[in-house]
Length: 577
Image (cartoon, rainbow, N blue to C red):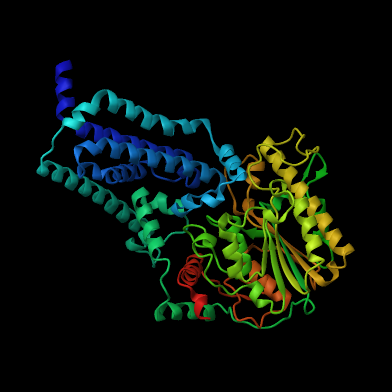
C-alpha cells in the first residue's frame, strides 16, 4: 500500500501539488466569505460562492502548466504569498471601511503614517492566523513530498494542453452558470442583462461577491486603463439630458445670506448623528452641538446618508466642494485629483479660499485635489508648530488666528482629526465618559473623542465672536462619514439606514430650518450654493438643496446618478466647460 501511494505521488506529483495549491486559495477565499462577505450579505450562497472560488483558484494558477518545471514551485509560492497579502489587507480594510480596498490604494505609499498603522493594528483578529497557516502548511508539504518529484516531472505538450483546456472549460462553465442564475433572478428588472453584471459596480465588495476574484481583478484593471478617455457626443448628450430632466439648472437666491458673507466649513471626522443629544451617565456628549441645534438661525439636518467610497474623508471633501459622487473604484482624489472641476471655491468669485488639514498634504493626493477644487491655499500638518501632536483644539485655535488675518470675504474648510479611528486607546485627556461602565471600551472612547471635538468647536465659535468674524460668517459643521453606527451601540446585528446617519448643522443662517427628511451627502453642495447666493453659477451639482427637496417630483435612480457622475469625472466633463 505504501509503495502504491509512493508511485502515485511520483507519477502525479505536479497534479497533486497543483490541486493542493488550488485548495489553499479556495479555502482562503472561503475565509473571506466567512469574515467579510457574510457580514456584507447574509444571503450569500455557499455553493455558488465555493464553485466560483474554485474557478478563480484554477484560473489564478493556470500559468503553472505553461512555465518551465524549474519555475513552477516559485510561481505557486509567489502567487499564494501575494494572494495571502491581498486577503489579509482586505480583511483589515473591511473592518474599518466596510468595503474592499481597490488595487490603486496599494500604491499609496504616501498614506503610510502612525495613524494608519494604529488603524491596522486595531483591525487584526486572532482568527486571521488561518490565512497564514494554509500557505505555510502547503509550503511544508511541498518541501517534504513534492520538491524533488515536481522538479523531475516531465509533461508532454498534449498533456499540458489538455489540462489547460479542462481548466478553462470548468471555469467558463461555472461563470456561465453563475451569470445565467443571476439573469433568472434579476430578469424582472427591465434593464438587466448578463453583460451588465460584469460592467456595473456599486461597490468593490458587491462586485467581488457577485463575480469573484478574477473578474474583479480584470474589471479593476480595465477601469484603470480607460480612465483617461474623453467624452464622445453621445455621452455629452446623455449628461445634458440628465441635467435638464431633473431640473438641475434653476437660478435664484431665495435662501441666501447677505452678500459677501464668509463661509467656514468644519468637516468633522467620523461624526454619527446619534451622538448628538446623546448622554452617558447623564453627561451630554455634545453640549455645544445640542445648543447650536436649538438656535433661532440654525439649519439642522441630522438624517444624512453617507455616500463616501474608498476615499473616505477625501471623498467627502470632493462631494462637498464639487457636487459629484465619488467613483466606485479607488479614491477620486488620487485617481482624478488633477482633473479640473466646477466647485464652491470657483463659484464664490472674489473670495479668498483656504483649507486646513491635520495630516500630510500628500495623503490622498490632497494638495493636487484641493488645487483642482480651486483653493488658493492649503495648510497641512507641517504648517503647525508640533506636526505630530495636532488635535482639534490646536487646529481650530490656529484656524481662528489665521482667519483674523486673511482678506474678507473668504471660504475656509477646516478638517478635524481627533475622532479618527481607531478607538482602542485614547490620545486625548480622559474624562468620566471613557471611565464609565456603560458600553464597550471602543464605544466609550469614541464618545470621548466626540465630546472633545464638540468642546473644540464650541471654543472656536466663541473665538470667532470675540474676533468679530462670526457676525459676517456662515459656519457649516458637517460630518465626513459614519464610523461607530447606532446598531453597534445597541448591540444589534441588524443594520438600518438610520444607524449610519451623519449630520449637517449650519450656524448664522438666514432662517431657521429643521430638516427631518432623509438627505444625502451630495445634497450639501447645492445647499451651500443656495445659502451663499451664488445660483448664477451654472454648475448646481447632482444633489438637491435641502431648501428645494420637497419641490422635486421625480428623482433619478442611484444607478443612473452614479453613472452620470462617473462619466463626468472619468472623462473630464469640466475640461470643456
